[in-house]
Image (cartoon, rainbow, N blue to C red; front, side, top):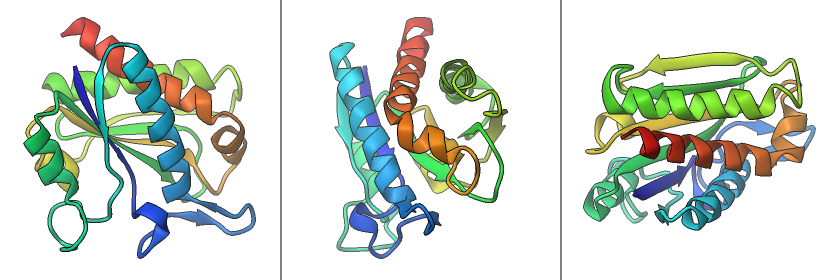
Length: 185
């Protein structure tokens, strides 16, 4: 299986670091890159071919930077995973797909299940926020393969301990979700 990983927001945080937690000196772009890089290693160990691209040019809006959607489509990925960290004071994971029906919905459910199964025992306050359709996200709308955007937790809540101390568990859970999906297909 060919897996395209897209850690959210701009490489190095410029011009868009995503959400931040100034008190803890955390940026979404850095956390997402850590999880994506680790996840890629676990997927490669499981026999997947992996391509990772972090860029704020999602669908051609920032010329001069690699275009995420075009690169994923041209590479011929079997699945696309965009990795993000949420903000707004909530707790837990939520995984978005173009439609909850079909392959994208199944991929989202596999990843969401693994995140909750892996992290809720570490922190009982970590919530299952579910799988949600969001067809307006360009990385879900414009990719030609099953695609998800996963929000692994909230940078500005009690999730911060999981995000900083259990990044390996987050990466493993995403990778297991992908391989669970591959086993079902």
